[in-house]
Image (tube, rainbow, N blue to C red):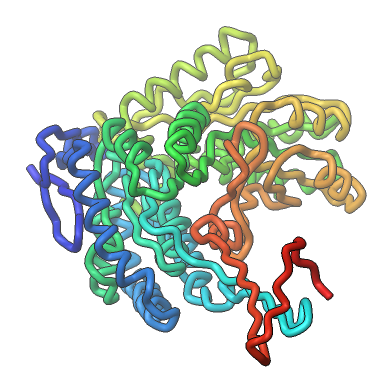
Length: 497
């Protein structure tokens, strides 16, 4: 059976690892590979390679960096199908969905190709007599990313292209559930001309994570995952003196007003709730139906949920593939059961779905729960599966209050034909990313991605301008070139004049 190894200093290696974890094909349930789990010494090796590479890469020209990134971008285009099939084989999502994540990640590479503009400093002439001030930004050194299973290409691409474009070197610890895509990306970087050691991949579990968080030569850590782990990463890494981006979980709401086009809204809610089997941090998991919209919306959602075609991710006919592991499937099934026990109406029940010829696969069908209340587990828990809970509200103010009382604040949406209602909603909800008639409002690469409340621990969003600031630090230089040797030095505090 294939063993997936680390990629350190431009070389595929087992390093010191002896422990492994299984990598499954979610459509069949069968193990297809093993992945090495790093020991702290493996992280040390990756950081040493990155530190050595930083000596030259941190001093490289902007032209050299962008030349590599332009080439890398073209390789992502050329290998899109291969990369998408690797993602699908280990994650389970349909191939077209995997292509979509590659495209959205590639947009960050395109942003990084213009890094020269993002790194331009400022200059102030004659702030005092014969004195000028200017500023510029420099890379941090070795930085690291710890990324989740649900977007094995896109989320890392939110991190390392900007880190590398700004002159840093990078150590990636991808999810051990779907690790192969990270190694393929490393190969594409090498083909693009990136020097050995600038981008390294270390596979592993908590032992590797802790080694990254504690390592004295790693200057910054970027993390995307659940809120409890985001809090742990933020606390431990900041205690070690590192900068931290820590993006946590979500419970994304979409409000549907009575004046909305309900067919349009239901179409988009169905795709946003059940696409990628609900395994997206921006998936809509709660629909807040306002007033008379409720019964009709649920009726349409039921019809559309029953029409979702569930099957292997490699089947072009599939709308939705399996979930990533058997444990995830059981957790989702249990969540629907608890919803029924606590009084929700199970309008569509996906717990017993079977896919012909794939009896061992990790399949669970779309589930639609109505009359969910905010006290129920189906509302409170981040299920991270194809479950859409419908909560009823009488007014838009009540809907906003429901969203604001939720501990998460990642993404939200409103479906309406009213500009007044939309403007009120976007100003009053305590959420970081908002869609108006757009269910999954993931910002473009030239904006930054990040929620509020328990969806973002600390205050550092990811990619875009915030990413450039995160991976660099500023220097401000005050300059005087005296006309003569005569000194105007004084023992009083200097002031402009």
